[in-house]
Length: 91
Image (cartoon, rainbow, N blue to C red):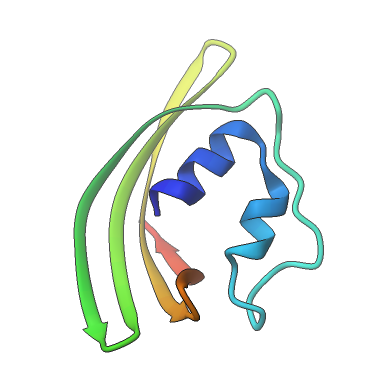
């Protein structure tokens, strides 16, 4: 999760695509360079099976004078030596 947050913060769409499950990965991913991610708080993580987990987090951002936060519960799956993002429910 932290690596994906860092990729969003740095605009690294190649890593985001690589770390996204094939069945839910968008064909293209465009990030708004005006949106600056300013913080990440992992609120909960839980193994849901031998190769699956959920992570609940809140990420904060700023865009010009606006600030905001996004809270999501994400599902991940182990593939090989790493984890891939399946999907998430934004609250």
